Length: 213
Image (cartoon, rainbow, N blue to C red; front, side, top):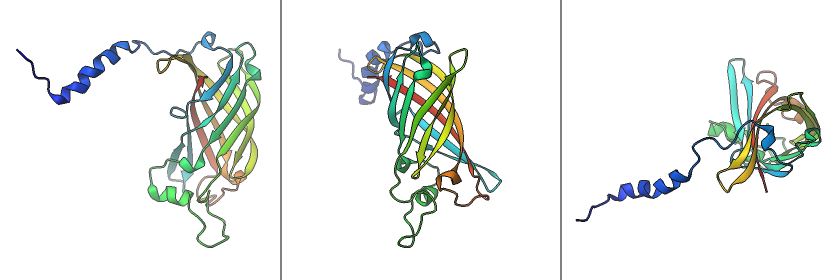
């Protein structure tokens, strides 16, 4: 006797062997002993830079930059010597309002006029570390570096937390994770449109994964 298998059930049947191979516990853990020295590349699919600022004194508005690239070079025996070089594509900004995105990336209405924010073809932002100060526990650090945004370079300090390390099940690649926070003034970078009605301080919330290559 033949048993008919509905076509809609085939994907589930095919997925069973794959699910059986998946780990039963999270592969990453907050254990510095799992970190090995070398150069890691930012995972552009799981590294995000969130930003938020106050709108007219009523509430905060926020958005996200993705597709982040760059490198982290680290020696677990000398974490203060770590080097970070990250590039953030401004043109890929994600916001809830299509109208706001158009405003952020709008070309000047008049030839030669300065755009309110980034303009139609913004250059990527870049952060290059200059110093790393690690706390006594070794899982938090203040990472200071030069942020180049909108053609202006200013020093910025990130408050960084180490969040996990281990082999990723996707290719068994060594992976390190971090979260970070910082605050900048957008007017420092020539982006002061609407200040003070729209907040000058921009809070940055960063989640980053780096894969060893």
